[in-house]
Length: 328
Image (cartoon, rainbow, N blue to C red; front, side, top):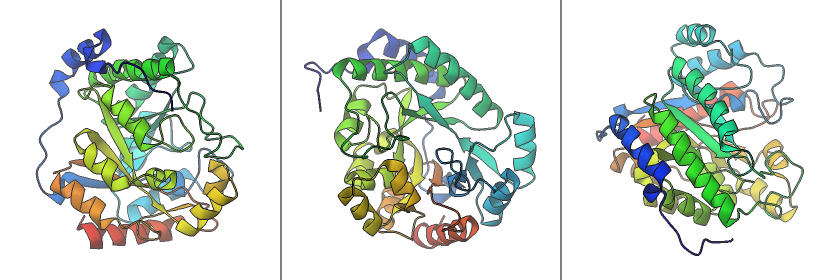
């Protein structure tokens, strides 16, 4: 991939300096070495899929959140069927002992004017704040092939130096906007995007301001990409503010690579599953997070076809596995 001839840490830029000043009041709290500092959530993508609305199209919001609560989770991310009115959503979740922990934000910092992205981000931020979330997970969608019928590896976008500069500077500025509300911007590395590989994650982390930009760590996307998920975890542990626990079915992954599937075809064919049902050994992940005194949300996130993988059954399976292996 293309590299800048001079790597200037974003913390030395005017945007980063402003971000640091604004973020002091929301510095990350010191975590305690206890599983009590970890809260467990599950994403609705196992019930209904935002990228593939036909998957779980018949499943209602009420069924989704009721089954989350029944399976023993205390948090949820936001899906496309969730009420857009914070009061309505808070009431529905409160009845079930749930709260919102995060919601996906599609940034287009490499392809759209910054002010346009910022305006959408502020609306997203304010909604999340109103429903109790203090983390915002952003993934760069400029030139993404995530939703396209293209080979997920062969057609993967590679950012230019100028795109990297716009992305990192824009994330610092958005991170400052999040900090103004006492929230934390976390970046979600993702298959089929410009920030997928270890090298790309390193470049983004090294060129964004640690005071206002964290990392959303996703086991499944790292393993799908062929990365060493434990090495990434350990290297960037101090920046990890949100965790997605996603397993991978190795046989399906091998077929996806061999037959050059698109990302969504791989999802439909079952490349992802819940922790304990695939090829990833999560015990080292749990141990590393505990050793580092991680404090925050662990989110079970496994997009599958609910007609093939019953959402409640798999939510219960993941809950039992995490309780057994992590004591959470």
